[in-house]
Length: 352
Image 1: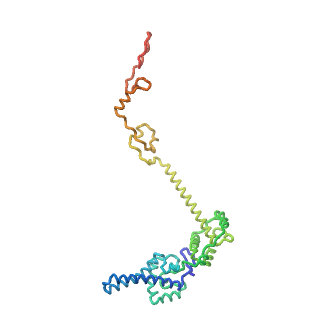
Image 2: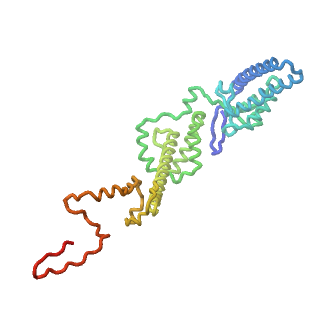
Image 3: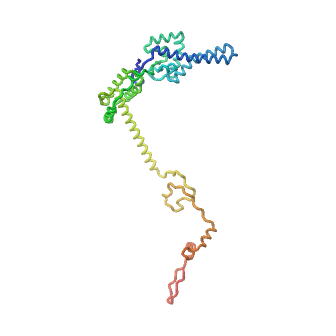
């Protein structure tokens, strides 16, 4: 087991791979690379039989460098430290702080691997036996570590959070809502989150010790004691969930407030442009309508064209519905003189 210190100053206990498992993974990788190299070399010799021996030797050396250094480097970089043999045995290459490796780490491991596996792999065997974590020379120069990513079922059960009865979690609701989390620093939140996120990789004694230490620090900051019978890791998980719930509520309230402010500012803007442009025609003011009718015009059917002169003449010839004479347009007719008073001898007033 290795004690790794992460960027958040959290000590993690990871199961490092020892010499037998690493040797078996390397043997599987070597078999796959050897088969691929042999097939390509035979195809090269069969397809370019007319080449000179020097050219064939150059191609053979190029293929050897590709399958020895370049291909393992690319596979470990793209798979984040998992080669074919390591994937089969549940191993993985990580950095010294527990993070995923990059191209430079894989390249250094591949280049130094020429020395490690040169003379019957004796340099790698000697360095692995002398190292506390079983590292070979490539791991020493690259600053990497090979860990056991896939643990046995018993080890996985030891590293997981034990189940808690539902009534216990239900009883924690009121205490979590009333909890004061303002005194908890960001470093403690990061440490608790880092430990809980790597529960599958931690050893049971290390996980229990980390949980107790972080829970004691959380109790000192919040003043809420760990309930009786509740594991310290579950206590940390409950506090983290309460903090995330509060952050989500604050973010939702801020988003709602910003949306309401946007609606109020948008409604207060005078003369907002209409979504549909008005139909071409005379302005509204010329028709005598109030100014309020000009806002938000609604598209309607175009007005009917004026009737031709023939139809106007036909309409003028129609009799009135009551049988009286057709009304005269008083706007165009001359004004009639005022009616004279009736004479004493009788008579009547002329019709208008």
